Image (cartoon, rainbow, N blue to C red; front, side, top):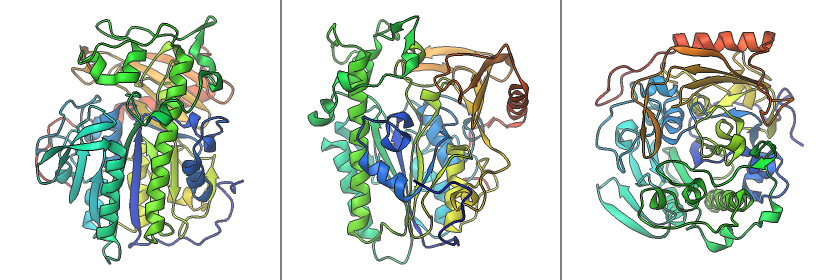
Length: 489
């Protein structure tokens, strides 16, 4: 068992400016399928070890549960309305050499200013060029996912296909970067991205596609409505969700004509998702082994999280971008044995915008004034059980905004001025006016699957959270004009 968050720390914490840092971000992983978060079936030994040896947050939240905005939140330490002025995905396979968003310094820029070498490896999918956001080195794939024979871009400007599995190539790039940095007096920051368990499921190694059977699956209770299990529902233009999960854009853009068997059910889809989670865990284990082989595991800060979760049939919905636990909750762990004593934090809500200021604090680096996240270091070290702000705000492209406390979630609906794209729903103008205050209210402790909406029967907790959310929506600024060139401090 880990000591409680308020227990005296076993190690006295002091900032270590020379601490090496890896932020490992995976894609579309909700915490519920990890052993360290209580799942009895899915095998995640590497992540379980990371949690056992580090600091794990029980409640961590994506501030915008879609790829581009969530990743922008992490890098900027700001809400997506502030760092981008836009809430949806970006569509360029490789961003042009421009910086239309991110008006203030990013995590990579702040660390580079503090003397760090900075590198991006793996998925990018952010609406600005990585070099203009502080990365000295970078190699990243096109944002449309393939797990094998993927197209990559590197700093030289060369585009190339990496043969074999993309995650094996990413591991190779990581090893080469660590070899270059090992023994160097200059510390490094590597932003390491694993593209799974995001779809497609069809092209990971076969052993992970068949690792779990439908009989082993533990369905979440909210995949049933009126006794009916979520099925292969239509998405857009006649496309269906199960095929999207298995073949992703190759299917929905019409590159291939495929269909799942008639007897393929949500249980089968869950089993494939379980395999994707274990595949992700395998590569986290390889990352940690690469550090151990070079004597870097004890004093490298490794932060593991995901950009968002996956609805996977809950509430008869798929993918992400809604104010439900399956979409907004993410795993979050900080691992640095030389600095942080193991503990499980159950007394503080964390979110993606908190990662940048926390990492900068642990590194002894200056935090840019524009960051809206909060430094979790006092909670990580056990100095405090909780911070004054103990909730996380969430916004979505469908106009839902919410606030998640340790035990409750309140949601409001903003006006929806939107148009549809092939990727999903994108807003043509920022939604700002509240049109439904009493949209959602869940007691997530008593009702963990959010099956009883109490919005019309509010109590003092609902009123307090609703007031906080209304203030946040009114006071949190939007980035109005595109930003070009270097960051403005």
